[in-house]
Length: 279
Ligand code: SF4
Image 1 (tube, rainbow, N blue to C red):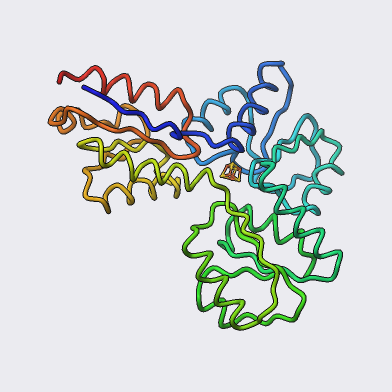
Image 2: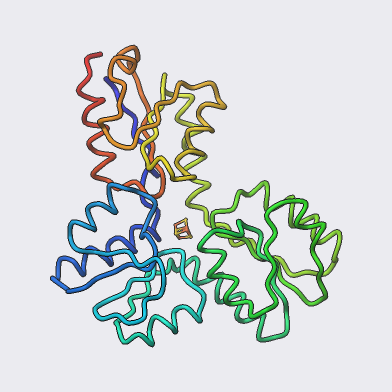
């Protein structure tokens, strides 16, 4: 079986950095390592980290020792301060691209600007960004949020890094129509965009696509939806055990891609099993 593996399959830079930071500590034999929130949305990685003694903190504990790792999404500054005040070592693995958005918000807040974040209210990255706005931040996820928006000049508009470009452009225009004069920063990370574009291209070259990633990973599901939308047969799998080998045997050339939180070792196993199928 011929397999075409997408170049941008798997970890984005920010996720790889956060996972490497954690694994480095494990390898150095550091004691009492915990991540503040699940490091990534992938059960295989979380299970492996747990086997190495890495715990997940869902709340700020009353006390802590050892090391607490802040994940790629980042946290509001007051939460980081609280974690540092616990006495544990805080290792900040916030993605540099997320830090850049945090820095833009902080800089303009200090100059008296309020902030509109185009993104998902419940997302951890947005919660972190809101912490940098002081009390002047508002989140816009859809058109109804624009209708409810109350703004005064000066203000800035930024986006969650994984925001869809089309949605950002539309909501940004609506906000500027309602409140002209806002300063816009398109802070969308191109990693998601590149991965999606590659799937569109691959669909034209292969007979079916296998998309590897956690069942709860939204960006993985989105890759599958794009391929389905183009009429390509799609197999969504978390690991090689989920592969429908009988159905895949009907094809001669299959594409493989993976979500931003899928580790390489899982992708490699999937590719290996598909390659082993007879033509
Ligand atoms: S998607 Fe982009 S901004 Fe978000 S963690 Fe990955 S590299 Fe960083």
